[in-house]
Amino acid sequence: MSRRKILYEGKAKILYEGPEPGTLVQYFKDDATAYNAEKKAVIDGKGALNNRLSEFFMRGLTAIGVPNHFIKRLNMREQLIRQVEIIPLEVIVRNFAAGSLGKRLGIEEGTQLPRPIVEFCYKDDSLGDPLVSEEHIIAFGWASQQDLDDMVALALRVNDFLSGVMLAVGIRLVDFKIEIGRVWDGDYQRLIVADEISPDSCRLWDIETGRKLDKDVFRRDLGDLADAYTEVARRLGVLPKGGNGENPRPRLVN
Ligand code: TMP
Image (cartoon, rainbow, N blue to C red):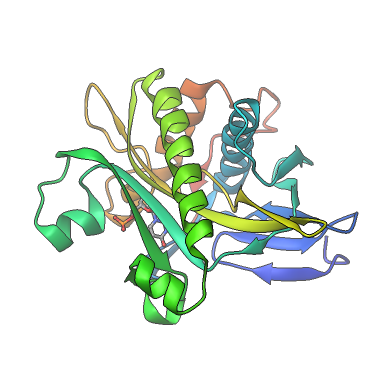
């Protein structure tokens, strides 16, 4: 692995040069961070779970015609993806109030929103990924009006798909974040879903008990993060089947 060229290393993933032009290898780390990396831990096995879960969601999106970067899984921690030009925005969709929306507008956690709400944050760790408006995005040239319309349409399709998949296994999709990238087919540009879709970037609550099954378990010290992610993977039927300790249950190692 060290012989490959690292193109980007983030908090939870590493991107390596891919085997063909226009491809990358996405490696899922076990590192968990919260509050702009003020809180950190290594959760043994988290990377393998998120690799599988992101594959599962991206394959589902492909099956319903939502374009995304996933090509194929390579091994427990890596997947081959299409190289994209990432748009420097986090696209958040909310179905129920939680997190920063609750704080910002004083809405009680868990309140159902009148309709899915799409928000954009500018991707800049040094600024803490601030919430931005469409005016900012267009004025500063991060995306065009057409891009914005396409991004909202993509995000709402992802929301409908993920909400349904989760509902079928007794989980409420409270909110999630996606990233979107540009790909070029000749002179023609398209926007596709990129990055990852996993419990690191969603809020997932058990419908019966309200138990949190996402990164809030880590952010708010609510229990064992690995248990929560394993439960999501188990319900969706995407836990690797290998025996002989090949896929030990993830556990917190520091
Ligand atoms: P927020 O309530 O903290 O704004 O987060 C909304 C959703 O977006 C939640 O599911 C967590 C996800 N998210 C990320 O995955 N990464 C981020 O940097 C931010 C700000 C949110």
